Image (tube, rainbow over all chains, first blue to last red; front, side, top):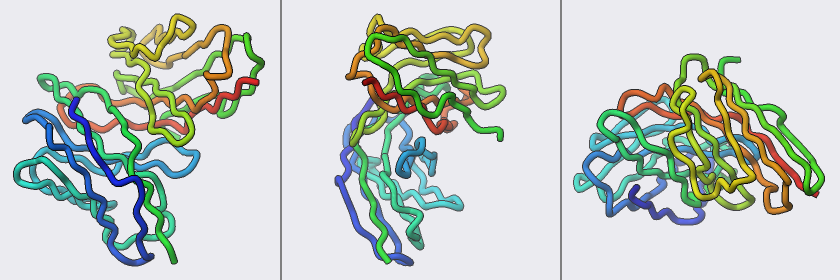
Length: 113
Length: 115
């Protein structure tokens, strides 16, 4: 699977938007971009995923560049409970069946009051 | 609770002992994954099942590790002759397994400490 590059850490003020970047320059046409987060001592939590169109759900928005080489996860109004490690993952699609999730080290987001 | 359930949540064992962890996936999820996570690292893939068939194993899964999913529902992960390097969080996840863009749901993990 393609690898991703994320900054190791970021800070964000409470109530402001948190924009978490991810580079996936070797992504192939049938690979999806997934975002998970992990709050301390808990299992990873699914946030959002997309192929090439921008996506939004109740948790976040995902902006994927037109060439699909990078993406940004946006938490529109960060709260202290959003403090976590955020993982950007590129996931293969094998003819309709998804591949495994291969995690990197992620970005540790610290939301500060 | 209809999420992925893992038991026990914590396990302390002496080096050389065998341990077994259990994972109950979300009902009707036919794909089940095991991951291991050490401090400061992201989860590392160990193995996954499609129903009862174990389809892929990471080279991290040494011969002391064995995973089963006998009836395609719950799964067990056994570690024989534990070593201190086995100390980690062991995570289980499940997904529907079909369709190109379905998400995997993780349990809370089992934290193993080998002393």
